[in-house]
Length: 129
Image (cartoon, rainbow, N blue to C red; front, side):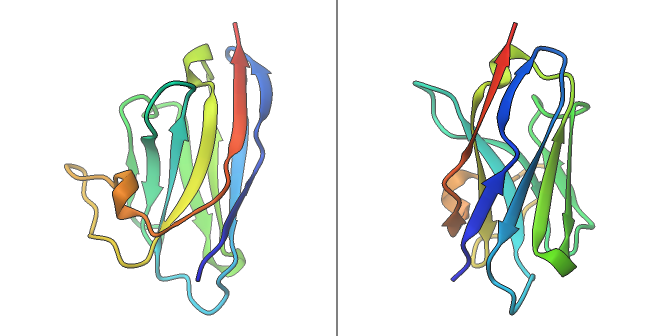
């Protein structure tokens, strides 16, 4: 069982930056992929960025490319999402998710919500104009 816990959300003005963190509780292994998803009010949960177990491969949604950087420190079971040049449309609850049993990812097939096995409770990001 892996329990992700997010932190770092908050309220910022457009053009600002935030760094989200996710700590996974499983200290016996870090051989799992991790990802960020977000869900805005009235919308479906959508993929933002993902990173494989070693940190060697990263994947981004088009909306995140050039503005976001995902990284992880396996020794701390921690993943980060650095978000820059934030826009009001980035306002959402951001969720950390872990894939232990899901399929392999690629540029053509980044993870979807159904590929993830464990979810955090989310952290709210609010971007004002």
